[in-house]
Image (cartoon, rainbow, N blue to C red):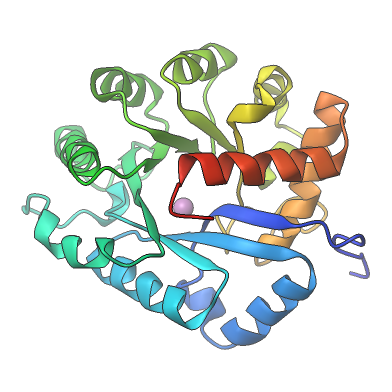
Length: 263
Ligand code: NI
């Protein structure tokens, strides 16, 4: 496809990605070089278990644009085990480890019982509070339980790849949290998310990819990378009736406000 990505090289910061994924195994350094060419100035990689958390911290040493969130994703819980904070603790002193994530609840895949997922989620929220880091939250088909736990813990952080209703978004905003918006907003059937984006104050928006997944149109279905955020920002700008540049700029400001280790 011959489409220019980000022709004016506006700065792009991806608040949620997984560049440790095997999808980038063969050509990560080339992809990072191209993304930088296309304006990408920062990416927060999210760990999904202890091993991937260690791996992304290592990647953050090799690539200047990479930062890390470390945590255990609800699909990656260790059967029969309870959360072991000491396994993440050594990663936190790294200057580029900026958050605990991604953590949360996933009832779509149903890999682990609800009570186990909630226990891990709450344990990691407590941990984040103890170590004074914001959280990156995954909620898939678990809106009620997620919101209930967020209201209880009142964490600093973002609800990534937001898929709830406009009413839920307003509850999340009331808690002082941010809303993560990715490629899904460009999909034809994303009417509910468009309503959320329309009402969302610009100072609570974080742009993200979830790379290698969820590429925005016109790259839907292809391997996703952080420079494609340009198309997500374009769509958000269209919905809000503002410029793409203003959307990208607001997201970067919000990222720096939320993750104060990012200068
Ligand atoms: Ni993710």
